[in-house]
Length: 179
Image 1 (cartoon, rainbow, N blue to C red):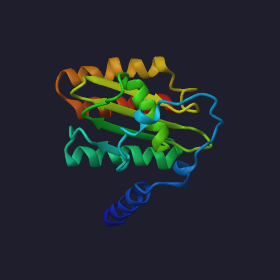
Image 2 (image 1 turned 135 degrees about the horizontal axis):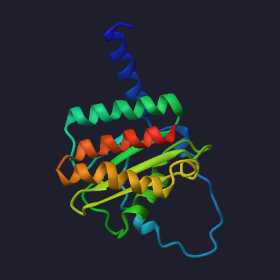
Image 3 (image 1 turned 60 degrees about the horizontal axis):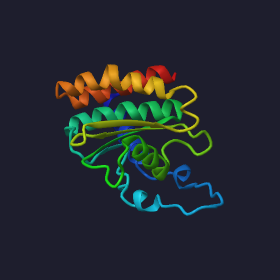
Image 4 (image 1 turned 90 degrees about the horizontal axis):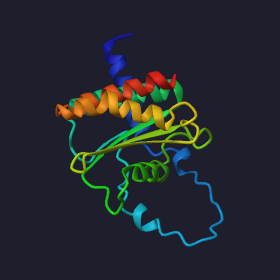
């Protein structure tokens, strides 16, 4: 296949996947039997801008492009969606794991039928990282596996100031374990 054709396919795929899909709009309504105070927290969640949401601006343009390609290719191949978010603050949240979970649910990461999304949130000023999995994802990528990937792949790179390298190594490891 010619390089021009490959670039055109990649461009069209990126544009297509950056649109909000039907699965993300599907929401399961459940009866509320108690007062829910989490709306205040959820209102602090930003709108998604794609599969890489670099609000904390820790990646270069070429790093975002390279990581997007890895994630989009994986999504096309498996229908499993991984979203990376960098942010400067998780307020009013105190727990980045809860923030990552709420963000993934609010954005509709993964397909609604399989609940096969994975959300990685990095708060550089907070010095925190969280990985939230959908219920379909956590059958394979358990909390223990995610914690091990953070500790062994991501954090060592972060300690050297290599944020992109840490996220890329973590994403590749998670993809390997998710096969």
